[in-house]
Amino acid sequence: MSNILELFSEPNLKGDSVKLKADSGDLSSVGFLKRAQSLRVVGDPWIVFTGTQYRGEFTHYKEGSCNIPGFANEISSVRVVPGGILTPKITLYEHINYGGRAVTLEKAAESLKSYGFDDMISSHKAESGAWILYDGEHYRGSRMVTVAGDRVPNYVPLGWNDRVSSVRPITDTWDSI
Image (cartoon, rainbow, N blue to C red; front, side):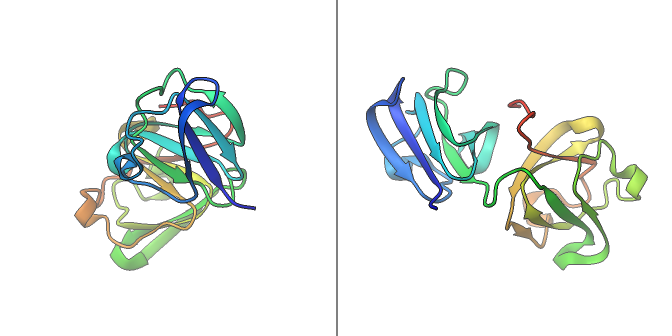
């Protein structure tokens, strides 16, 4: 089955539309930057962002159709979550290029101190699901979103080296942030 996100320029799946089958870091490339007022998801969930390149505020939508009042005329970039969000798994590494000690998580960690990893992460592999990494404990501070299949070998160019303090998976009970 294909994973499709269809964006519509008007509420109730009306108006101009665009079908996406892959991530888009900038919806201006398809003429739909900050234009969506409703959407339809087929297949795996999608994460939508208010900023380009997967930045800004975000939320996720699973299969179905809906109006998006909280994100109407705000969506600038989108990512599909391959395989869905039901069985999240991420491996965090102490050093760049997946070196040093590693910890694999399948649930949220409000503080990586208990794992001996607070402010020590330099790379990761998102095995499944979608995850939010925070530079503060208790899910506070700056955030980075990663989805299944992401391999980030070096946080240095991202400005995230040795900054991650807490992580949590995006789940069906998770609210937009």
